[in-house]
Length: 543
View (spheres, rainbow, N blue to C red):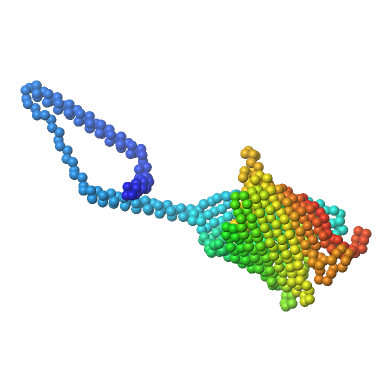
């Protein structure tokens, strides 16, 4: 052990002392000079011995007796005692170990002050050496182009249930922000969105999409405060850059819009395990809400999911979620204000400049509103499927009015032709985009990842709606029934890019009133629904 320590200390001392012998040329010159002097001395000694031998031979020839040459004895110093040598070696070892420890401490201190920079998956990230501080640049850009293939009937229904939808293009999302860690236990996320959002087909002024701090020192629990999108359902928990289609399905989107969605003020407690995810959030209004409320709404949003089975081939997950809106925003100041709630959603495509909602209950004065949903997802290798069912309800504020109930469901699935799978995202309790095994490259013939996807959704906002040609029954709501079949081809050249081509068949059934025009008078209790197709393309960058 002492010998090993001596070697380590010697190596450290040699490393530390190496600068003192940096002038190698001078050392070599001195060695050459010393060797030259030794060679001269050896020659002089040899010459003197030859001279002595010659003189001795001359004396012998004269008959003189010459004594033989004697070598002068060389004094050899006695070695010091063993104990002394051991003590001297121990002093030397201690000195070397001390120098090695000092060098190690100095190296560790210098490393602690050194940051690391990475660009994993194209996302720039700066991290301190001890991992307690980090900063990542977050960005997502989604540019959409869409064409609405409507018939002439859309113009006749312009004043009844949506005019001719506007084809064109827009930036669905254009987000830029930072995300990271502070002092080990604190997380933060600040993200700004300059895109159109879900409320308009036009680009808007920049607004807060996420702005929160989170204490994660109680892992697997965390407490989040600020503006964020609380986990309202499985599809909602899937990040905007990871959703399979251009938009989330209408039943899920309606569920999240009640008390969730981007920029929602709130405080949440989350549990994040390897398989179990749970979230409970108290929420208010939205940061960018343009509606004037004298008192903001208040609600609770809860979700739990469990990846109850997982192996190399299979993954199976179940998710339950619910929202309870116990106070809607006041429409007017003072006591007795109405508390309006409106259940509505668009045709799962937001390029239309007018942002029309073809199904809507209209503003209803409700004391409370709620929804709950049950969803499941299963994956077998490169096949993925997901389904969900939702119920929605309102409690009428007016005395004697019956409560309202609506529902919706969806089914969707994908087949990744290149063999990849959709990885499970532990942080959100959902699934993410596939990561190409071989990123796209012309030189290397890399294909990226290719995916075929299909979805069917049905959102029914009718309650005791009656029939076409008949008057609306008392307490009924004719919000409409929207059925959409969607087909899509997705291409992922690498982990940051995605291109999608989507086709939709939209079927809207709704009873309403058609105003006079086009050769007819006012038509009451008529069919004001629409049937049309859409074709859309998206290019996406997500870091």
